[in-house]
Length: 306
Image (tube, rainbow, N blue to C red; front, side):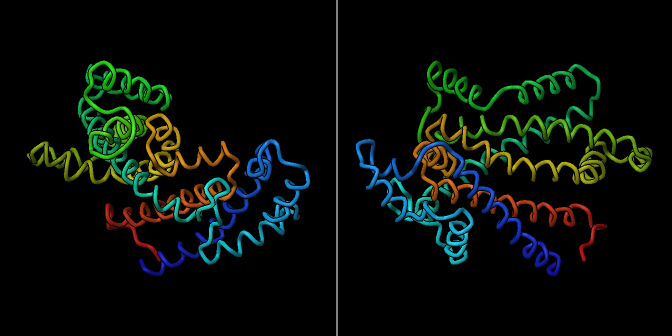
């Protein structure tokens, strides 16, 4: 297992380098000149050119990337063009909020999705099953920004149950986490239902029931554990989706996380902030995939890594 983890960590290095280069190149395709943003609209062309030279924007793209990667290798993500603060400090200040939101959203998605999928699989083709699948389809169909606005309208403006914006308490976390977790819950519910139905039709489940085992034991100990592998895969993939979806959710709910920082960086042409934010998300996604592979062996002892 440890040798497999070491191999995966080594393979993650070229992935991070590739992501760094792609983000580096794409950010520079964004319309606008960061030197002009710094200098202001009334600045002279000479002053703008001096800023571009100081930032290295007048050099070839590969040369700029080489300098950027050299600094990246020692953990230097550069300085924000807008605030002049180190990008690492800005990201670290907001990263706990994003992790808190993503964790709460995944708890909502996993508990609701797995629970709904199991209930739906136990009573297939019933009214309950149809209701769960319709709700899952509705969850998949609603854009995050629209469902977030509806959450604010209903539960904050009309009912006044939860605060609409900002952070500071568990109450502030409810609306954004539910909004962000709804789409993932729908996907997890559909996968759980499909996987459970396949397992419930197998011979060893019929044998367990024929031996007189309690249905709760058959479902929990036999069926669900053997249906876990595809569910774990979907949950791992949805974790990455939650991190990307947090960009919209944090913007709608004014949640001070990395996603909102990324949007602010794009709007102000803050190259270092955009690059650093995307790299951090990519880095987390790589390690989430590694954690999912490790969980396979925990869920199914027959799986061995070499």
